[in-house]
Length: 488
Ligand SMILES: [Mg+2]
Image (spheres, helix red, strand yellow):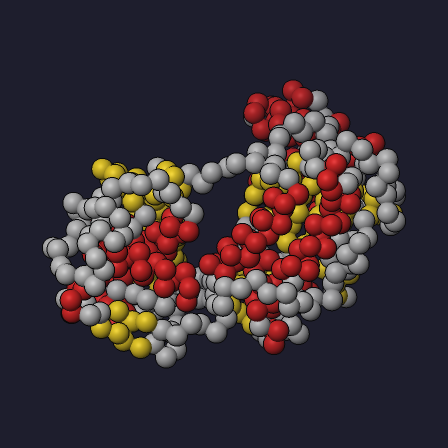
């Protein structure tokens, strides 16, 4: 049972806050296009093999869930707007969210684009008790991003995460019940709170483990806590058994880790139909490489190793990597290495997925010398003065930097290599109104680019427009969990 009311007092020692955006990708789509406000919205792969990444509450009422095949979602909710997703836009909103969170404390651990833990133990003098911080965050996210979120407060990460889940709207056959928005679980009540959850609520317990536990009559976290350490270790293995047993008893010492630097950056694409044509695969690999390089530039990192992944029709996966003599964020270099690796792999069977990943990341803000020897073009005259883009850069690297800037401003499909622009990727619609632009002959010969107008919904702004979800609890409310006879 959840009891209402402001309950900051008596909630001391609750230093972990978990914030989770509601239906993040779908909510951003509604924010940017208010015509979608009254329609169910599903974001994810729109092709035959697509999977749902995010569904609005209206779509969830119809039974649509994340990770469900899009084909199933279409059957359940044929009137929904099915959108392919704009991950550059989601990343930009996520960056704005991150800056709100780091205003409160530098101890922010992002878990995903739409989810983070905060350790607020050092923030009380400036921002008040944890529950006030939580309610304030929810209010700021709503006012500054125009989006809803749920916030949980507890003594540990596990409790804070389950509390934010309890703060969310509830989807039932009759519709959507607004959630409390913020839930605070006092330390004295946390065992009762955690023990009512299904075992799947614990990190490390997936569907197979839950099924195995279910065969022994263990379905709730409270059942787990009653089983002996030894029995659980026999059932689940020493490591998982110990971890699960500890968490079930409220023993969660995982700290909030503020800096979790990315170890790799990647992009994958699953095709509607298997592709056998190598030149078509090269186009997809080049496009993936350009997106990856663009994200390196955004994150001010350079990468030393490029990996290409190919999944064949029979689901077997092969990868090939190359480590460069010096790290790079150049789209031309990453794309050149990636297509060379693809040719080495020379897949003979149909391919269902290709991916490009870069790793060995380093700080890209320090001066460096670009890797040029593999893919440097013969010198050609440029409108820019020699060395304008830094020492050692070639015209091709400079062109790649300009292309990255255009993509950041106008979207990932605003500019492409001419060879790719002639035959656009089959899974993506062509950019409306694209205009072929021939580069000045003094730059790099007759190479042509395609430049499109800014996509209407890729304005890059985080607007204050309100989102019409109708499911939000009043922003100033904080709900204190108190154990009772009902479920969570
Ligand atoms: Mg979320």
